[in-house]
Length: 237
Ligand SMILES: C[S@@+](CC[C@H](N)C(=O)[O-])C[C@H]1O[C@@H](n2cnc3c(N)ncnc32)[C@H](O)[C@@H]1O
Image (cartoon, rainbow, N blue to C red; front, top):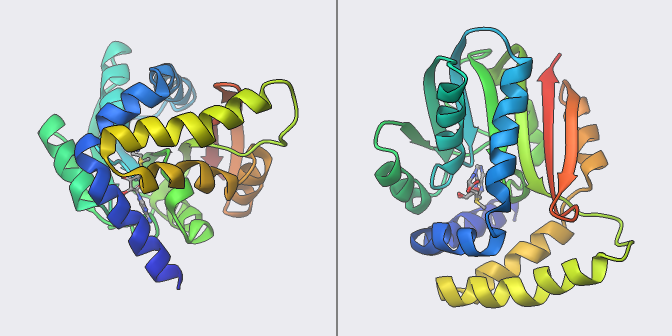
């Protein structure tokens, strides 16, 4: 049951892969760019050791890998290797074309083909929501990260449905987004999945509690875009 749910999600990303970047640019209105940069900068400000490996899980078409590279160069930080991992062949094919110098591996968040304690930083941007066996993935992240390494999560989070902005957010996520995303990708179902998967996901506090249970201590957490999105940076104990 869980297996087939996960397979369906990955197939959906295979289907929308050719138009994913275009739809993302329109739907996020560019807000995610600033937060991807912030995720990198806040992490580099905390992690002062030499960086052998950054793993971007659920890397999709590779945008987060590009930001790790750019922001490191801007601050003169050397990274030996940036590796992208994603189970969708379609998404990774687009990523390889965009970033021919990066390494990509087809695999799931729960099965990272990496040695114990080999990664300095592990990021997952707008990906953890799609991982059906989330707790298993968090354990896997703790396994591959070095002690003192960081997990960096950007994700749409659920809120308490209060406040003046809720009506606007609800309208955008449930009415506007499926229409525009469906139009660009010609796959309306995939963009109806997005608001539904957020509804079924966690609040920022619940996410941090799960990370804590897997051996991480949150050092940074902030919501943005009217609290639709959250950045969490947590250190492996
Ligand atoms: C919304 S995209 C995000 C892609 C990219 N990280 C970004 O920021 O644009 C979600 C990605 O999660 C991947 N995904 C789905 N299930 C996964 C799993 N079990 N483990 C790892 N990645 C998964 C999908 O293939 C897809 O590429």
